Length: 233
Image (cartoon, rainbow, N blue to C red; front, side):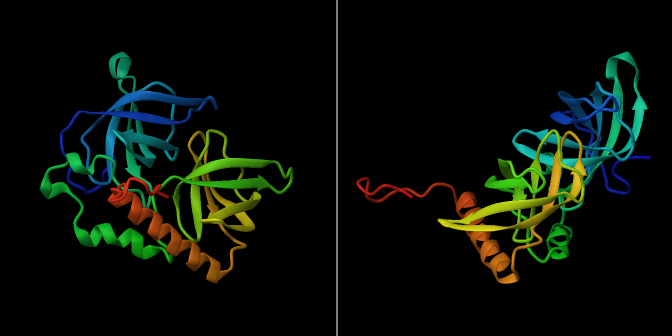
């Protein structure tokens, strides 16, 4: 079963980094090679740990990361080790989209369909937050890798269990928002998805607007100061 389903593929050799949790319950992080890539997935060979269908792993090409689900696994022999087919998890952007021929790139309608599924659009920015497992109340400072007014994804080798109740602190500039949250998805060796269950609707909208602004500023890059005597914010 090909990883890309009916999506057209390009025969490329892309050096990628992959990570996750092997069948031996040990985290791994290694280099590999992606071939037969499409806008929705790829064939990756050179995988050292044993993986199984349904596992979620992290894949990085150059500076772009995505979470992918393993859809098939083949022992490719000593040279290629384990070979896997992967599909991008829903709402993940394709890390190698820029390398694909124009006729294989995502069209605008397909690109928008993921955003339209969510009430709040996820922003793939690094956002610092503080969270505490309410059973132990020990604060943990982390960076969300994609975040919206409704929730976020936190990369961690040892994610908490689904259903774990959390206390999360967010900031809108100097304003602190402290609220309850819950772990909704768990990908061992990769991370966890968190829903902001206790954030009021109005606060969600305000926080989303703040994230929209941050993402816009990040996309534009640093502003050039017209007056060097004025410190930049």
